[in-house]
Length: 222
Ligand code: CA
Image (tube, rainbow, N blue to C red; front, side, top):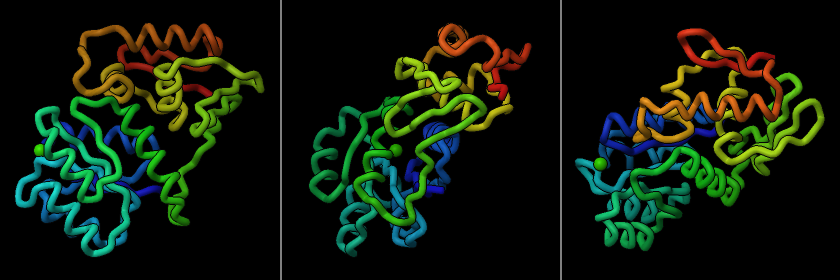
């Protein structure tokens, strides 16, 4: 399991990140201020750091300077708000590897995490790259899907939705959870887009695989 440290002081965003990363098979720990983040990041327990720049106790840029000053090579992806453009430049100069501007989609964050982990090529990094659930095979690296040994063309969103369902076959996901995971925490919660996309997936892989759980949501049946 790849372990990721999340340094974020906004509980809502921290919870969103934790849920989302765990749904993609990562193990997460949250640090809600910069001092804790710098301390935990030095512990050697993590493969990657997601770092909000605007942290209490110690600004994100100082956290990066401290870590890099101690020779820590842990990949760091920073989270900034658009107004922090100068901070972003400083953070990259201090040794951050990549950045995302809030609000961001989980999909994009996961893609960037995978890029960083691939660069790192640490022997500790053992994230699964092929996911199997019954007759369904998802290649996470190439984002390709086969069902009953036939390739299926999916859009990025369709792929992400299917990936989440396929990670824990049998688990019931509510529409709200899927909306959070695939479309992001700031998406309109009254939207019926989840149902629309489940419809698209059923058209491509047949109706039997994704079950509707009445009054609750959806699950993958294998
Ligand atoms: Ca913050």
